[in-house]
Each structure stands twice: as C-alpha cells, then as structure tokens.
Length: 285
Image 1 (tube, helix red, strand yellow):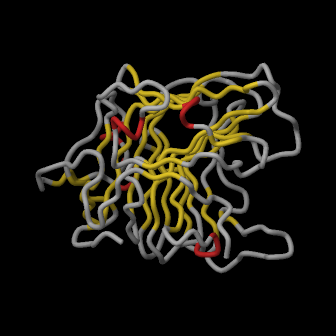
Image 2 (image 1 turned 180 degrees about the horizontal axis):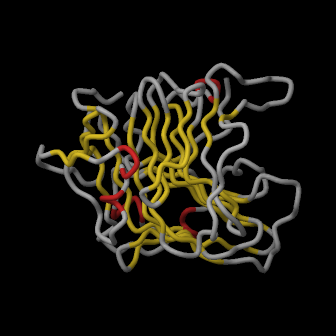
Image 3 (image 1 turned 90 degrees about the vertical axis):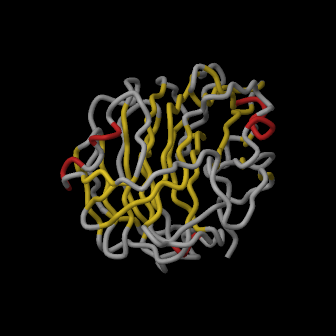
C-alpha cells in the first residue's frame, strides 16, 4: 500500500545506531500512572529511564536541540535526523520545504510556517531518523503560534510506510484551537474512502490552545495506548494498538480540510525537546 506520508530525503541512518543524542545511565524514575508525565513538565529535558504502568522505558533519543542550525542546514548539523522534502503534505495543499521552514535556535526546533507566493510551505522532521521500535514512549515540549490554515502533530508512523498498520497521533491539532489524541485501528483502511478508523471516536480535547508551552506524552504498549497532557492522563485506548515498528515524526503542515490556506498566514511551532523511549530489552528495527 502506498503511504500517504512518503519520504524523499533522509539523514544518515545506521541500523541499530543511536539517535541524535543517547542517554547513558540505567537508574529508573518510578512515575505514578496518573502523573506519568510529571518529570517532563519542567523546562529541562527529562533524563534517565522511566517506569510507568509496570513497564521500564529506556531512552534511545534525547534531543535538546542545543546546536544552532540555519534554514537549509538541519541535516548537516544533525546528520542522524531525516526530513521530507519536495512532496505535498497530507491535505495536498502544503509543500514539504524544510530548507525554507526549519531552523534551530535558542535550543528550540523552529518550524516557520508561511507561504511563498500562493504556495504554503510546511515541514516534517524525524528526530531519530528511521530508527523504529514496536512499543514506545515519546514526550515532547512545544508551543505554537495561532496560524490559520496550519496544524501540528507528533506521529508514530509505520516504518514500512503502510498506513494500514496503524498510526498514533499526539499531540495533534489545528493551530487555531485545541489538540486531541487518536490512534488508528490496524487493518481498518478503507480503499474506497481512503480513510482509517481512529479511536477514541470522541476524543478528549484540551482547552486553552497551544500558544503556551505544553508537554505531551504518548505511551504505547502491547495492550494500550495512553496519552498524557502536562502530567495528566487524558485518554487510554485499547482497541487501536499497533503491532509493528514505528518511527517518530514531528509534522507541521496544512490543516486537513477543504479551506484554502490564507497566503498571509504565518507563524512558528517551537519544539523545546523530544525524548523517545523503548521498552527495556527491545531491539531497534
């Protein structure tokens, strides 16, 4: 099956290699289930292993974006990352143009969303390249301007590119409103409609928008996908749990609707840090 999120560019990827920044140490922090994201609420990036819901999580990526990169030099500065370029985004309105959109400064990854003429420019960044695992925990700290016509999502996407294997989205939301968590039911792809079925059917939305700094965490195990927002458990899904390796993607793109993107709409999505964990003993795909 052809993926709706194909790729054309990648950084250096070494099978079984470490992400952009590896975290040493094995001391685990035990986090109560309803506060499993509390260690990530502070400005500083969390470090070390985490134990949550009976699972021990070992970080394989801890990216604090501590090296500046001007637009067009992301992969030169961070060679183990990857990005999409030269193809249209999910809605078909935006063009993946990381060289005109993505930079790193002030210890943040900056997506500068804007149009060139009538063409909206967007970007996707894979902070650990194509390194993938079955079952993961991912936390990001981010904020976004209010930008009509655009959205932001952190995706766990199948390494195979086969959408029918599932998809986990958190956080996801248009940059004019709140965010909500969803996970696609593996095997639910309908070729007639070109759609997947997502759970929860009526997901809990956050309040207050995305202009303030927030921490979002997704935790994917064999029996559930759990979503935290600023340390509070927002949703637990048991009927839409992927079973194949997935990779982390940070995607700033145009909104999935039929409305045109205002040509004068412009603004930034800033990612302070991203930490991705594997289950103890898991091997990379």
